[in-house]
Amino acid sequence: MPNTTIREISGDEMLDIMHGMAAYAFHPSPPLIDKDDWLEVARKRQGVTCIALFEDGAPVAMAANKALTQQVRGQMVGAGGVWNVMTHPSARRKGYARQVLAQLVVAIRESGQPLSCLYPFRESFYERLGYVAFPQPLKAILSPLALLPLLKQDLGGEVEMLLFSEGFEYFLDYLGELRRRIHGMAIFDQADRGWAERYNSWLALARVDGKTVGAMVYTIKGDRPTEFTLCATRFYYHTSRGRYLLLEWIARHADQANRVETWLPPFERPETWMPDMRLQKETDWFYPMGRVIDVAGIEGMPIGPGSFSARIDDPLCPWNNGVWRFESIDGHLQVSRTDQAECDLGIQALAALVYGTHDPDDFMFRGWGKVSNEAKAMMRSMFPPMQPYLHEQF
Image 1 (cartoon, one colour):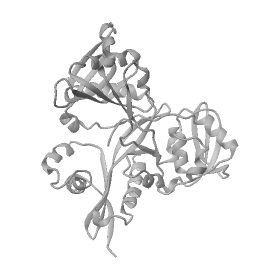
Image 2 (image 1 turned 90 degrees about the vertical axis):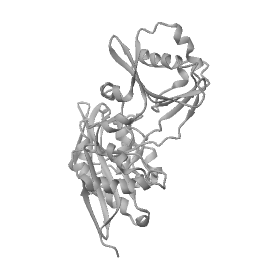
Image 3 (image 1 turned 180 degrees about the horizontal axis):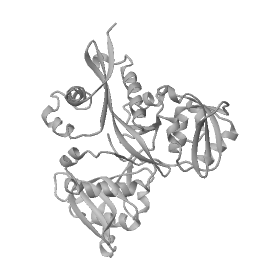
Image 4 (image 1 turned 120 degrees about the vertical axis):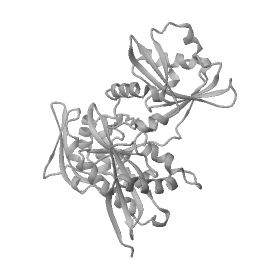
């Protein structure tokens, strides 16, 4: 049997191990991506916690975390953004990824982050560890010709175009404004400025009376000047004027780009924006998952009236196991230990309630617990359905 150890790594050791494993796991090869080029960006990342598993002294599995602040039902909550979960091919199928994650969630909890989010390599693996899937972002594909009528209107604002690296601080400021409005939206506590400096995109800021009301991150790609594709990886706004200012900016490219691809949050309805867009939708992008790391740490968020108690079963975070009471007091969630349980819930069910992704009727069919009709009614009252949108990609 091999000798295994698990410990936190940092500094140059972390970077060396991370590059060696990530270059193989997440990039085409051979050759492996250039280490010096990778390090130029990686050294500028801040706030990273990394756990590695060693087999007979050699690193064979690892996972990393970077702190996020996430808006959940109107409350700002700390969340661990889990990424770079990987295992060397020689050590796969030995349960090492799960062992590393079990150690990482301890560090996440100790850092005061009661929630966690990630992008799964396989949804079923992370669901067994307590994560639930968020709705998929969508890609809207349209013709800019349908937006030309906007050029004839005075929309009462303006759009400023910057290189993304030049406008990154403006973008961060606007994301902070937007997060207060969007359930599930999370932003890194320490922005990845090294990545922003190298991110080759344009930033269009829609402004009204000097205030930003919309932001679009985009590139223009293709081989023929009249048949380019305008690809907007971010299209955000919080007023109708902001949305139409950005759409009007896209219309200004109608003789340059004959195709527009726009990534949008799952709650958007782009088919209602303008007529004759010949809109197509795709959802082939990775979508995030979320879980509760610390049951005691989620209290305080605004919820509806009601109360229930539940015996929680958590396969990854043993401190969550036991009977908990969830109660609405003055419109905010209160969480406490208790003795008697009205139902049994897997930690997945609690995450589904917090994020608003599943109705309690689903729990039995997903293997997440047994709930009476009375308790289901309470859960629906306290945790109405919502559509979380994460924003950060990692």
